[in-house]
Image (cartoon, rainbow, N blue to C red):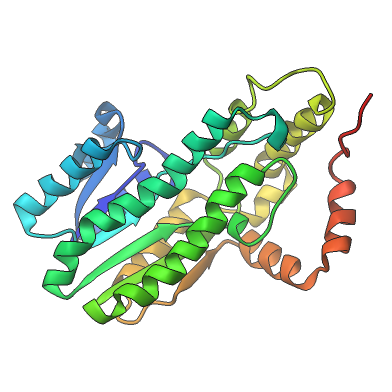
Length: 279
């Protein structure tokens, strides 16, 4: 059993993973920007820390707190993330930067912070939560997909770079996971223009997101516990796989996209989304 630091534990995958690993006997540090959201996890045996993955001082303080008590973080689970949706031209650049700060730069910085002690103890594991969205792109999701494509590249590079120090890097690729993720994704579009050439398209993206997570397609997905169990498996494996897909939707969508030529994929997307045009 090891010392596990998990980001984004206020709900969803992070909360489920923290509870699952604590039940297995790990020493789990569950983190969130608002520590009061972690009371339920504390009751389940987790330790709570304040951690904002967009704030350098907050990240450094959280890692230092764990290392001061245990010497090193044995397992880092980079889970914090959300989806900024909408047509690219309509999204303010500061919102795009915020998306990358949370989904990408926080992941990189926390990995940098835990690695020195992992290297010194010649062991450690970094588990990055990616997405099937790092293997394919839906219209209206360009910013979010870009962050998850980045997590794919970062994980591949880091896996090679730290293997000689006894540190293993694992990428988790969930498909449809029924959490508050869809609500957050649709809420991220609330301030986008409600008129103009992209208005109808953005409304269609909102509708499609809601339908995917609440309609018949959700039967190909799963709950956050499904991801938590795979993370636990990846942590326990002596030789973990580089990637773990979670849910039937991830297996199906990633395979389908790999086998579909770009032009045919575009045809399929036009059947689901209106092509933005000048009115």
